[in-house]
Length: 95
Figure 1 (cartoon, helix red, strand yellow):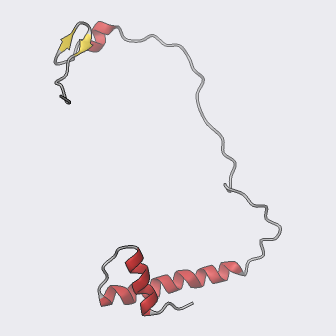
Figure 2 (cartoon, one colour; figure 1 turned 120 degrees about the vertical axis):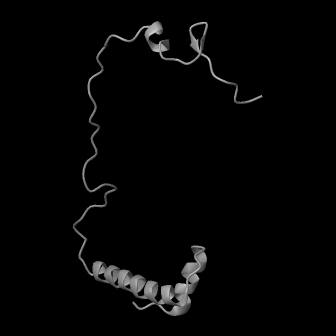
Figure 3 (cartoon, helix red, strand yellow; figure 1 turned 60 degrees about the vertical axis):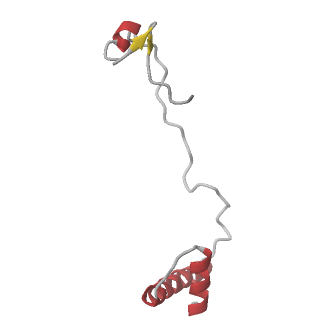
C-alpha cells in the first residue's frame, strides 16, 4: 500500500511534526513499507492460534522474605549532615 504525499502530511499533522519535503518523501517510503509488511502478515492463517495478551506466560520471580538485621538509628544518622531529635534535618521546601 503506497501512501500519498497528502496522507503523510496528514499523519505528520496528527503527530504534530513539522517535516521538510525531503523528510516527507523519506517517511512516505518508510511508512508505505511498514504498511506493505502488514499486508503480508494479514495473509498468515491464524485460525488455530488462540487469542492471547502475552506470547509467554508471566511469572513473578521473587525471593523469599527473610528477616535480616537492620542498622541502628545512630548508624543511619552517622553520615547525616544535619539531624534533630533522631531524625534527618532538611531545609523546608514549602512555606
